[in-house]
Length: 326
Image (cartoon, rainbow, N blue to C red; front, side, top):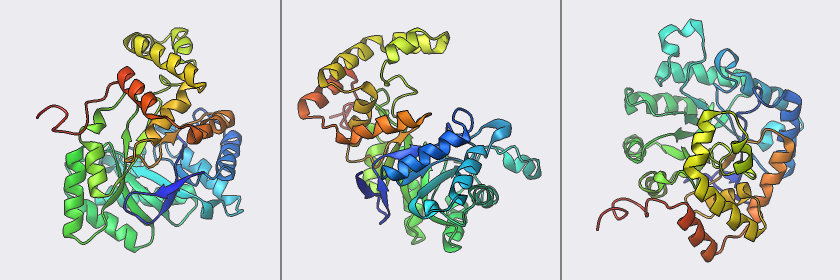
């Protein structure tokens, strides 16, 4: 396993992050336990979850599964750099209108306590805002996060789904308070979603954030046998997407066949080639999928392959404004 610093922090995380969104809804607890044990055995120390995973009336289920895995002992909690998120509704009638999606000092405090309880731990290494909430001031947000850090309940603060200018404002406000600010931005980024290269990635690199790509395979579109699987589905939305990307996916499959590597691992290797990227989030449903994804760390994409990938999946042309201006 390879390790790197999480943004400007001194904390080391594995170059692959285990995403746990499927734990509960699609992966039962026994299989989830096997996967987390296997991840540790493979050197993956970075686990990502969210308070809402489990979804709807089952929100919190994923954190509960992880908490029961920690409770087995054996150094499991000590070996994991744990990341979770706050923003969505937990369907808690006690919170009333304060349970609606968004961020506030009230909600951060309440939801943090809930996550700690479900995860059966007294601290979280990386506490992330699951989405931006521009209706809440940074005085309120940083005040809430500073308190949680000072209490030892969280180590670092991260963001998710922030625009480049949101990151810049957040870091400016943090600096004025002599606070570390954000150390990571979790963002949708893949071969089929390269718009973040315009603003988000440059902002993150300049201001000390590591990029944690979510949906690195674009919901399976960049996975092995995706063409065949999506063609056989009854979902109208999937059929529309396959038609939109058919030519590109066929060219991508041909390139991967030449390399002798499956599409999903090449897509992950492409992300890891970018110095702005800390660790893509893999979201396996089975142990076999997790074990297969590890091979991406050993794939080297030379300049000619990177060029062909750019031709198949063109990006915005670099960072703004040079991507579209002189």
